[in-house]
Length: 399
Ligand code: ADP
Image (cartoon, rainbow, N blue to C red; front, top):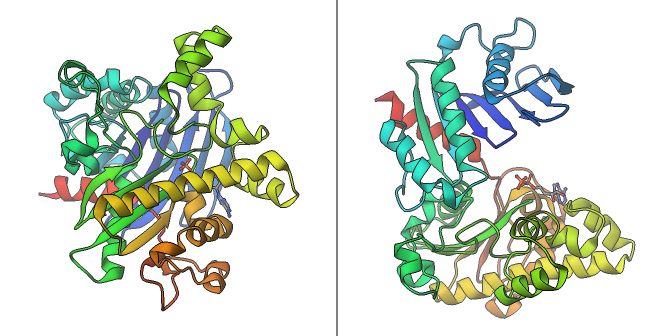
């Protein structure tokens, strides 16, 4: 029982093949720059460690990319299967499920129709996902495809949390509201945190901190609020995204700099956040190194990044009227010792106390990092989005 997980972007296709009998990841890789100049292909056989590292291969469209993925998975030398018959089903990561989906579903004509209808809400992502599904249906006929949504887990939010105070018809006509993203990660991490806590009625704040970053408040297993919004631009400061800003500042900058809608969109999504303030890189490791060397803009960007997370944690303690655990995940959340310390130290009023020594040990896996006296548990949890997509796909298709 092997599940192929696919995440198709407009010019990329990430993939991972997972054997569901033991949840062992067999191979993974990425096709980048599909349909543009100098496409590159990366692949790793996770059983032997053999890999193809950023090889230039012609990939004029997603069909060619998926053909290359399937060919490599079956390759005599570095492949992990002898035939595509070994792939039972395919799980697709979908960024936006709108209000239609609160759970993963098997793809049928209605799903495609709904995804097409939602596409304007995620113009960069959903059309690429739909194309990915159609390519897979063509190349692997007869196999079941499942869609797993970034928005689904957040569909439990109450109206008071997801509505924006625009005229009501902007919601009814245009579907403008908060949806939230990274839901697969928030779901998995909050479930692990709930198990570690050993408590059914629980108040958990999940901080997913990667290039994109979002925070969610999960009460008794249900999201009550989350920091990303109608799009993944809202919330905390990110690698290249602003996160929350005064909406009027957007109009002001556009007017003063004479920017078009597309230019402002690019400025807010690709040139802001850590990159915008620090100026040299969007990567948190680069930021941390420069901060230690005393680079002033790096210090400012680092402090802003942590401060905005601290504010969201405070807000979500208020949203749930309490908190049992804070879980850090994502590249920064899992690996940055300094960010966890900086954020937790600023929240001592809530009785949040990080075990500094344990934090510095960088233990692998899922670990508790709070002191015995801490009123709130602090966890580092390794997210596993591909595994969750594979699990949902397996569960839905095995019947
Ligand atoms: P994505 O959102 O693309 O999935 P990741 O979750 O992989 O991103 O997170 C990428 C971020 O994690 C980068 O900013 C990277 O610098 C940061 N990161 C990775 N390893 C470390 C580390 N050891 N210390 C601090 N930051 C790290």
